[in-house]
Every structure is written in C-alpha cells, then in structure tokens.
Amino acid sequence: MKINRAMLKGLIFAKGLKQWQICRKINLSETYFSKIIQGKINPSQKLVEKIAAVLKIDPNKLLQKEVK
Image (cartoon, rainbow, N blue to C red; front, top):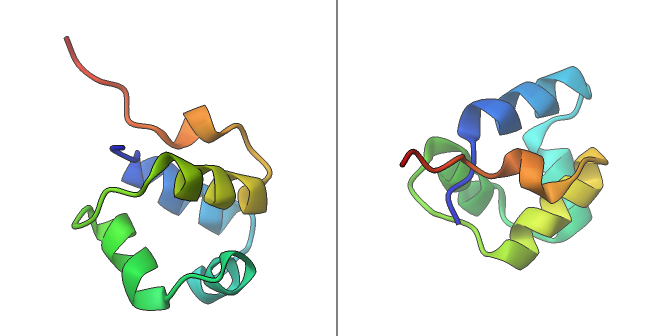
C-alpha cells in the first residue's frame, strides 16, 4: 500500500510523538519505519492499521490517493 508520507510526518509532529515511540508501541524497528517514511518500503494493510491506531486516526487517512 502506498502511504501518504507527508500526512504521516505531519500527524506524527502534530501529535507530539517521536518515531521511536510509534515503533515501540507496534513492535517495529526504527530502521523499517524510517524506510516507510522515506518511501523506500510500502507497508502492509495491517501495518497501516497499527500505525493509524497509535495515531488515533482512520487508516484511510494515511493512504495515498491514486491519481487516475
């Protein structure tokens, strides 16, 4: 799944969280999470849901809209 990186970064900042805090809550390595934020890795639906749960948002807000 393509994640909206700008949205993810903005939400992390707005919620006052650090990347390591999110990683610890969902049991994910900081390196892997960093690669998601950089757009090097596309996360699974389940991982998007876990990240969204930590951020307390709808998972669909994290998904990149496809241009048709």
